Picture 1 (cartoon, rainbow, N blue to C red):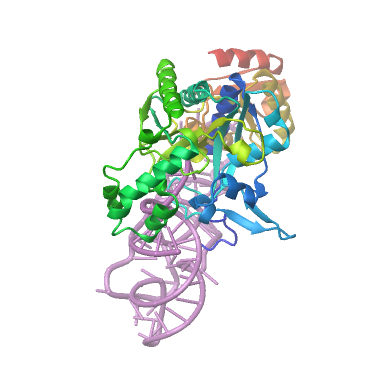
Picture 2: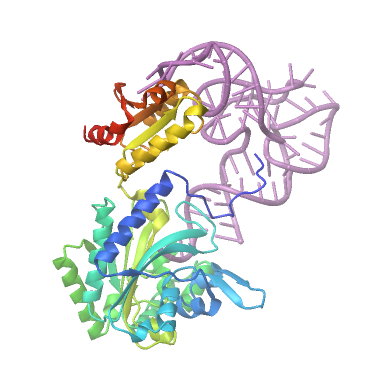
Length: 431
RNA sequence: GUGGGUGUAGCUCAGCUGGUUAGAGCGCCAGACUGUGGAUCUGGAUGUCGAGGGUUCGAAUCCCUCCACUCACCCCA
């Protein structure tokens, strides 16, 4: 099959009923975050390329080789955001929010772009649901953000997830740790690939992400980030763990956890799922106390996380709650106008349900056959199977000012005056 | 960027070591059937067999190149 047009590599169409699940997950996210005092922020997809080079880190792979960067018509270098924290921080500074009352609580939902080879769970256009909390340097910030996160995950039906936790300390401890790590690995680096040698030279922490057995072996007995923490970071980390335990949040220390973005300080965390492929991280986050200042704002501490919405939805156990559904079947096109009026009344009587008119008006038989097909798919489409009704509008009904209501699950049906429609359907829904 | 796998109808796939008009099931449309369902029967539409080139009397089938999809590395959500 040779299609003239197809979606761009790494992008995809989200079709019903999956698109309905996304909408529901986003609704739950908004409801949860709002109840904790977080408000939505929407920032542009396009930003100045330098913003990401400065924030995400010039030695990271994201900036190195994964950005959608291009010159606009005036020759300015623009980039489609590979993540949303940098844009949020830029917006917070630019609009004066960083100088306003703290804490500042924000969340976002939207598409992000990275120019990578697609594979299971990884796309060039993907969506993230993220949260950023500004202005709180104490461990209460970690506790709040993680407790809210777990409330959201539980609302999506997750039960067994645990968050992996580590501390990368301050930039100073990070540098010291990097040096120590390099001295440990360098003598054992024979057999390293080109990429790993580059990482060793530029950003040795990143070696922890490697799946190469040679690298893994070289990391045996390597120093750990926690051993290099300054006193304050050490205490901060201990307090975070205490607060998480108090809040009943399942977590596990992971000394090898090093996030891929350079701006993290102290706390970093992530959650992985066994039900995904090789790309198993469903969310990641951490503290970034220096980022606001380094992007030209005041010195404001901050913490946040980003959930990969595509991966989240792939493994989230929740299902759509069933909706009542009514199909109005005109016998012939002559009956269509009346059927549309009947449907209008039913919509008013059954808020939150769905009412469909069979616009093809191909006769009662075909209409009911179609209704049956819909009935079969009801559960997959998130419809309330038991409550599905067909409303027949034909010659006889119009002559008598009546409608016929048929319950699809049982086949029982009843004809009654149109004036009783709302009342009868209300009762039928209860039954 | 590197490697593996796969490309035949809307979907799932069959098509043996090359053989002439390219198939099945499901789905779709119509009729049987102008007022009662998931059934049945009949008919119909949709394919440059991923694309281009080569070998051959003859290619969906063999060879080459390219493209797309997919999985993994890398990296991350």
